[in-house]
Image 1 (cartoon, rainbow, N blue to C red):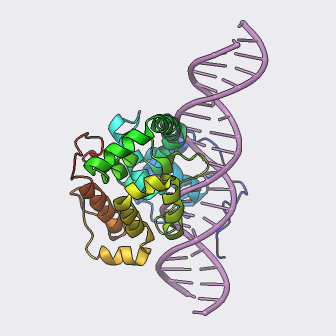
Image 2: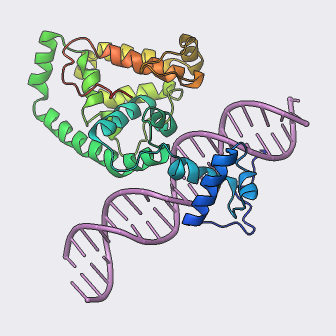
Length: 261
DNA sequence: AAGCATCGCAACCGCGGCAGG
DNA sequence: CCCTGCCGCGGTTGCGATGCT
């Protein structure tokens, strides 16, 4: 449809940015802002397309960007947020000030995904070994609910771990995805019996159409005590729901605590 | 020391959503 | 309603850096 050609390639520079270009872009944005990315390069005298400028600014030149390695807390947050939000990197980035969606995406693909895959494998094998006794024990003390949280906190969330699958990319997709998610999480019938509460959690959460989710979030909630835009209201809500849901029982391992952002 | 493999990051590409005409 | 233009997002690629043989 009415999509602008990616870049008019005529005479526009591509590839790595030079320090001079960076300077020009920063100076121009500081004095004029970036109202119109498409027009910006012309105004600033840059031989770049607007997209390129925008990307450079957002991912690299913005003054509030935090550089350097991700902390353990940040990594944990990414893992948890990814579990909740899927590949919505921009939404995840919105929860991690100073980090860009691109950066988070890179970290996910280069570090976290592999780590999760690995530990998922380990856990899976471990679970195999002690499946029977463990299941019986859980039935006894009825701490079924925590499995959901285990799955989320452990670096071994079954859903996350599937290398082929990029966890349902959006919450909205999940209506149909929920079935397969559940299928993946709970393979044996014995297990599925244990996960009654999880089932309802997932079916309620995942099967809810986005419209309904938005309805629920008439008032944007702020789970982190900072003002949120309307667009983020739904995510805040679900984050909150999720975190509160994990507050009961023996949730004392601290791993679920999202850092104060 | 040289060649090869792997990793990590910056940047690009193409699509979808949205707004305005 | 349709068309067009712009923005933002997520997936992918390219390439330098680093590690390994």
